[in-house]
Amino acid sequence: MNSFTRRSLMRAGLTSAPLISVGTSTLPLFLSQTARAAETPAKGEKILVVIQLLGGNDGLNTVVPHKIDGYARGRRGLRIPAASLVKLSDEIGLHPGLKPMEKSLESGRLAVIQGVGYPNPDRSHFRSMDIWESARLDPNDLATGWLGRAMDSAAERSDAAARINGVHIGARNLPLALRARRVDIPSLERLDQLQIKGDNTLTRIAADVDRLRLAETNSKAPEPAAPMTDNPLLGFVARTTATAVASSKKLADLDTRPGSVKYPESGLSSRLQLVSRMIKSGLDTRVFYTSLEGFDTHANQLNVHAGLLGQLGSALAAFEADMAEAGQTDRVAVLVFSEFGRRLAENASLGTDHGAAAPVFMTGTLARKGLVGAHPSMDPKDLNDGDVMFHTDFRRIYADILAKHLGVDPAAVLGGGFEPLGVLA
Image (cartoon, rainbow, N blue to C red):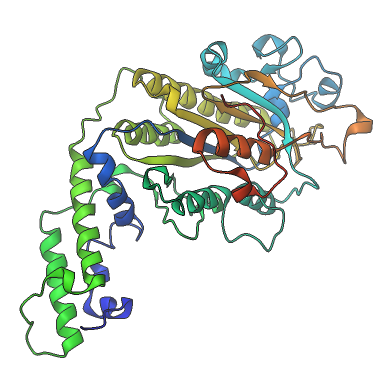
């Protein structure tokens, strides 16, 4: 039997075929994983959607402690008027840009987890993102992310139905959070990247395989094609390609016409609408990861921050309504976080500088609703170099998601010592 290797595949030109050229080498594998779901209805596994707010969201002007001593003293130019807030308690309200989330709040599907962070906080964007995305404090231990390890852990189980597939939607590189050892996670911006174009795809693959045989045997003419099962690698290529093409056509033919929910026009809305379409299509993807950038508001923060939170609130409200209309509400939880908050005192440029603790949002079927945990103290004696301090380790939120929603042992992903926070039902 001939010895077929990746080098021989490249020499024969197979890696230039549509199998590889759909945008990223993981997409055909991702498509092949959807074949089971495309043939059968979705089985109802829980789904996690992660929205990462890039740049360090100002938590104090997102979840506004308008009646707690210290806020008015630190925020003179950036203070949000109490009358405009969405009431969470007598002392605390949501930024008016998040008013579209009021329905989720009233229906008990919104949790606002206060004072979230980690020990010895780092104000570097990149370092803090590494910590949140890897769920590890050791800078030398960044080979995998917390969701990547969850997928690896599920892949090791004998029950194939328990496995977790994920996808990143956005223009940035694959987030560290999704980096895994055993599972390939695709990154895409548009649904058409999941569609392999052209009716002659398999014919071109077969021609490449013939060229491969010719290169391996140094023959002057192609030998009659042997059955694909004669060689494991060629069999894998053929099976993966055929499944990917079939799944791509299935995606293109799926009836995913929009329902009555109208999404606002924004980049985040478009990405969440794509997530919705993929969920309603019956794919077996269980983790969707996307982001909204622009939160590094060192100057002229007021209007910029209002616009960003307006995008977040309106997009998330549309997505929640869409999932409810599609009967998917009980399956889907959404996690919204940023790498750090910002300092209590506004700066001379009417912005805020890098801080530490910040709130985290979750929507879903919840055991704890509305405000979760006390607001961090803003008493000057309790601040650390102008930062409010955390009291809830973010890994407790992850432990909750892993145990309650994804069915993965938190200790296998996070190590020991992180009790689930108990927000998810």
